[in-house]
Amino acid sequence: MNGGVESTRPTYWSVRRELWENRSIYIAPLLVAAVACFGFMISTIGMPGRRRAAMLLETAKRRTLIQLPYDAVAAIIIVTAMIVGVFYCLDALYGERRDRSILFWKSLPVSDRTIVLSKAIIPLAVLPALVFVIIVMTQIFMLLWSTAVLLPSGQAMSTWQNVNLLEKSAILLYGLIAVTLWHAPIYAWLLLLSAWARRAPFLWAVLPPFAIGVFEQITFQTTYFAQWLRHRSIGYFDRAFAVKHGQHIDSLAQLTPGSFLSMPGLWLGLLFAAACLAAAVRMRRYREPI
Image (cartoon, rainbow, N blue to C red; front, top):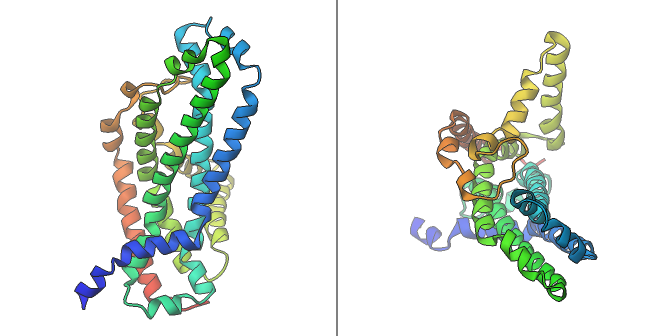
């Protein structure tokens, strides 16, 4: 019997089901990428003159200025994906109890562990992979469009000389892996809240941390909890990249995976994420429809 279930690849089809039922997972980043491309096309009006002035700057400033639109687009799409991931996790297990579809899925020979893991795979693997492909394709379009715009003025090669897409793609891939590992406990915690909450999981995710922060500020006049939340959000950056304040990330030499992987907070966070997912599996097993 187990062999028959495995042959149907329940995890694979469970992930596919999540993509079918939650189209915002890929539609939202694609829409943002389309808007960014349109905005970049408009911004290229008058580009030959601005590029001529940029080429007079010193090398580091010139590269930073030319690469700025490519990095801005990547940042916008990544932030969009994070927002999608947060709202997806909050609704992933709550939604199936709200619409009572959990009764149908429990009638199938698919374990609660498979279902929870398939939902965790979306923000931890599927979204980063989609974001990587979308950003790379968007940057390729931007590079080709700017080349076409600058071609009549004889400056087409200036973009290729200052934007190394292969290197930027490697940096992007590393950055996505780092931020996903660092945010894994956040996504796992939100999935646990989604499995536990009977009403308004978003409020349960937002109000308790807000209340704790306010209570600490009023009672002790300190902000340790707020600082911890900030560290949990962006604390990985200084250890994942060797970047000084205001410095631009444009070289593989600035990647420091050894320093990032040696962070105790990373591994404690991953242990916490595993505990949250295990608790979510158990919670789904015994939770009733709303």
